[in-house]
Length: 474
Ligand SMILES: [Zn+2]
Image (cartoon, rainbow, N blue to C red; front, side, top):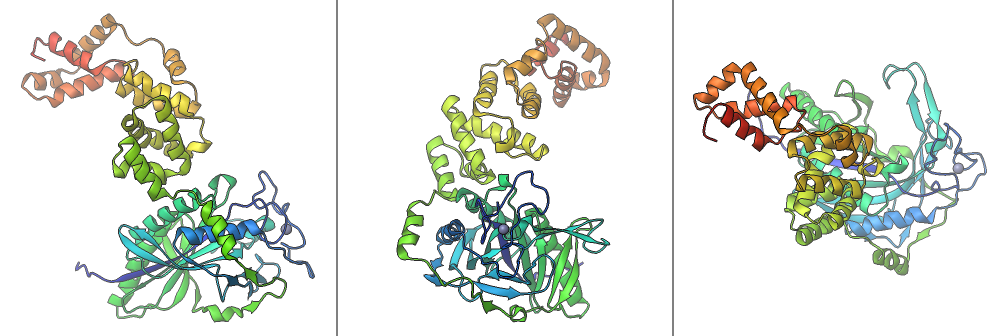
């Protein structure tokens, strides 16, 4: 098959549920923990006739902060508009959003050394959550609606179509979510989420929008699927039509939702219940002064202060602010930053990912992790056993020294010798290969001994015993 290099243009619209106590226009809790569906609601977020919205200032602070972080212009006068549509997730039959003038506009985020322009950042209310009761959007026979989500503040961040590949789209989203997290505008631990609409066009084709994709990996997959689908249409001499599609997470394909849809179709009108929003220079200054350091700056500091490689420092920072804080806390107790970073990135992160857990939700503490590293450092556990130990440690949160004690004492010298003899007897082929000079066979035999001792032996001592036993040089 001939591969044709084709120009791809991707733009993203990211909806971030903002970190506030209450909803955007009422005092209902935005992220009620353990609430039943439709418990965190009132006449405002249920759209009762005559109920009046009152704006949550904290949400504006967040959007201004996001704008500043991306180098946007902050508009001193902005408005709220009603976006009219009829759908059960919005009981008022309109969504309060910002159309004409957003709070922030014209910023940039740099990803893989290309600049992605940010067209706008505006504030709007989240619609209710629709639950496909028995199946997916395509197959369910009825839906359930949870209005707890109706009225939760959303920042909508819209890029220009500057992203050139699905991979860069994913990198952009990872960077954006880290920035939002460090700004404390977004806090996953409350249950807040980021939802993405992606639009993509290939040279000569119309723009296709993929709605509401959750998970950055899924965004990348949906976009990859679209490129192939659109290229195939072009190859067959057919047109790529402007449409909105939906990503089926199970089938990993996109399916048509609706044809041609333009912003003008929504019949925006100014919301008469909300006054013009004036953002003064003092307001902007106040937020600018409180701005925390952003991920790239923190990564540069970690690299500089702790002597980490730039790549490792970025992984630590972009894994999350909890991860970066943890790193610094561990270094205060166990002052070997490169080792701390190596074990955190290669093994701690892997064990957490395996459990689909964030560090802040886990039972791991800086004190116990420092103890774990200290045990490796002092030779109380070998690296191989440590890699086993860390799994149990992350699972239980128990002190590593207690886990080791529970596992019983490591084999004695005599026990080790017996194990080595048995392994050599049972692996005749490997032994003859080793005698013929194949050194991989030795690694294999060491591995077999360690398997018998549940990784409790010292690989160097085992290597010595094997050589002695076979009367070979070390
Ligand atoms: Zn409410």
